[in-house]
Image (tube, rainbow, N blue to C red):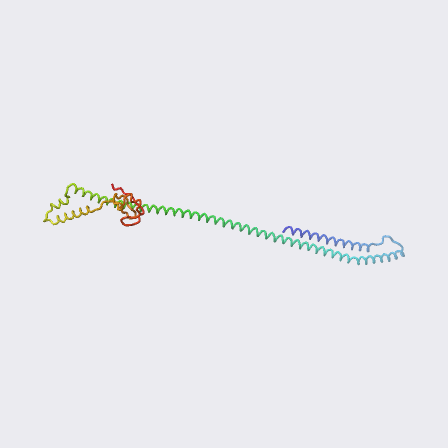
Length: 284
C-alpha cells in the first residue's frame, strides 16, 4: 500500500507543475501584449509626422491586438486538449496501476490463504498421526497384556490339572494301600492256617460253651470272616492272568494290568473305560 500512494503523489505533482507552466506561458503572452500596447513612443516628432505615426501605430496596435485575440483562443483550445489528453492518459495509467495492484493484492491474499490452509492441514495431519501412534501403542500394550493373561491362564490351568492328577494319584495310592492291607491280612490268615492245621477260629469255636448264645454267635461271625478272606482273588493281571498287577489305570483308577500288558491295552478290562494314562505302583 505504500508504493501506490507514492506513485499517485508523484503524478499529482507532475500534473500541478504542467498546469503551472501552462498558466505561466499564458500570463507571459498576456503581459507581452499589454506591454506592447502600453509602451509610449520615446522619440518625439513633429505634429504632422506624429499624427501620422500615431495613426500608423494605432492601426498596427489594433491589428496586432486583434491578431493576438484571434490566436489566443486557438492556443488555449490546443493547450486544453493537450491537458485533457494528458490527464486522460495519466488517469488510464493510474487505473491500470490500480488494477495491477489489485490483482497482485488478490493474488497475495490467495497465496496467504493457501499457505495458511496448507499449514493448518499439516498441523491437523501431524496431530492425527500422533493420536494414531498413541492408539497403536495402547493397542500393542493391550495385546501384550492379553497374551500375558492368556499365558498365565494356561499356566494356572495346567497347574490345576496337575493338582487334579496328583489328587487322583494320591487317591489311587490310598486304594492300593487298602488293597495291599487286605491282601496282607488274608495272607497272614492263610499262613496261620497252614502252620497250625486248624485255625484259631476253629480252636476258639471248639471251646465255646454251647449254653452261651453270645459265644456261639461270635464264633460263627469269625468263621464267616475267615471264609471271605479265603475267597479273595489274587492280584493278578486281568489280561494275561499270569503276572502281578502293577499299573494303575486312569481315569477309572483300576489296578488290573501288569506292566507288559499296559503297553498295548487301551481299554480298562474291568469297566471298559478308555485309558488316558497309567501309573506304576510298587506293591512290595
